[in-house]
Structures are given as C-alpha cells and as structure tokens.
Image (cartoon, rainbow, N blue to C red):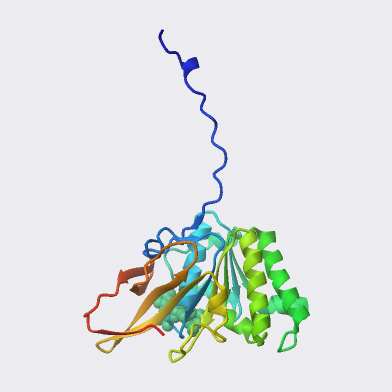
Length: 265
Ligand SMILES: Nc1ncnc2c1ncn2[C@@H]1O[C@H](COP(=O)(O)OP(=O)(O)OP(=O)(O)O)[C@@H](O)[C@H]1O
Ligand SMILES: [Mg+2]
C-alpha cells in the first residue's frame, strides 16, 4: 500500500528552546578556551592587576550578550557609568541603541548604597543582607542574564570580615544562579600578590577564576589571560595573549620560547 502524508509520523511542534546550559561569551577565542562558554549561572572571578583589561573584557561580555538578546547589567563601583559609556563608544562592536533600548544597563553602586541608606564605611550584617537582596531583586526585576560587578574588591572593602564576605558571595551566587544569570565579579590584585583576590576566600567560593596579567616581551608588555578554574566544563589551562582591538578582544596562544617572560599575577 502506498504511504500517504497522513501515515507519516506526526511532527511535534517545537517548544521554546530551554535555556542553554552555556553562556556563550561572544568574545573571540574565549569560548573556545572554555569549550563553548561559561556554564550558565556560574559566578566567575575576573581578576588581575591594574590596566590588564578587566573592565574591557567584562563590558564586551555584556555587549555581546545584549546583542544576542540577553539583558545585561553592569554594576559599577569604581568608575562612573557615564564615563564607561563614553569608553564603550570607542569600540566598533558597541551600539548606543543597546543602552537606549535597555538591553545593556549601566548602574552605579554608590547610587544603590545611597538609596538604601548604606552610608557607614563598614557595613553591618543587616546592611550586607540588604545590599545582597537589592542586587538579586534588581537582577530579577530587569531580567538580566549577564551581570558584572566592577569591582568586588571595592564591595569587599566595606565588608571586611571573612565570614561575612563568604556569606555575601554565597548568597549572591545562589541568588544569581537561581535566576539563571551568569556573572563576572571583578577583583583587583597587585602583581606581587600570591592570590587572586583581596582576602583569598573569594576565589574558593566562585565557580570560575579567569586571570588577566602582564608578560614582558623585549621591553613590551603583553596582556595575557588564563582560565584557572571553571566548574561545569573542561577548559584550556594554557596562557593566551589577549589583544584589545577596536573590534573586541582577540586571544592567541602564548607560544613558549617567543622571548616572553610570563608573569600572570
Ligand atoms: N577603547 C580602547 N581602545 C584600546 N585600548 C583601550 C581602550 N580602552 C582601554 N584600553 C586599554 O586598556 C587599558 C585598561 O583597560 P581596563 O580599564 O579594561 O583595565 P582594568 O584591568 O579594568 O584596569 P583597572 O584595574 O584600572 O580598573 C588601558 O590602559 C588602555 O591601554
Ligand atoms: Mg577596571
């Protein structure tokens, strides 16, 4: 008997795709290093000495997300967001519409501190709880899928006690994970420090650690990137040379014997 269309197995209409298990950073080379991206919901410490490109990398992460339709939130502590927006304009991959349409949100944490009345230099446990809830509520309210806090170091400076830093980060991490938001927390370290964060507890709590650093080559300083850990995926642990270009960051393997002296931290 001849088969007709009616005999053919019914095609079940596709449902909306489930959220991807990977947050594809969109940064050239980084997704390959991470075997496809950051596992969704991971909280990543992005750490390195001054001028190594932490803010630039985290901003590109957000811009690429916003371009891909994911609401992206930058919480700035050290630099005014208006200044960041001006810097962003120099990158070819940035379109001001992303900010105008609310897909890329740039906020200043000092404004949030002020709104919450957090004016003591050292925050109490209650104030830390209030701050954590406010950040999580904000992420939920705007539906952010990518969040950057630049920098964690400045927040931790007002928390100070290690068990409170731990609580803050665990609560924040759990809240963001529940919301499916992938985050980068920027940490500032000096080149001589033997750890990745100001207290050393931060790197143990986060799901991932990406280190930016400097390497000297014949009198020049190169920027380098290395993924130290990333829960939920295998990844390269090699060191890459990172170039800041108008079209975004570019990664290239850091070849041994090329006359460079690596000094990632
Ligand atoms: N638009 C740009 N085009 C090219 N290079 C840039 C641009 N903006 C910044 N840079 C370079 O990047 C460096 C600083 O990058 P960035 O601010 O991302 O570093 P950082 O690690 O966040 O520094 P800090 O620790 O001071 O916050 C600058 O010194 C400059 O050389
Ligand atoms: Mg910075």
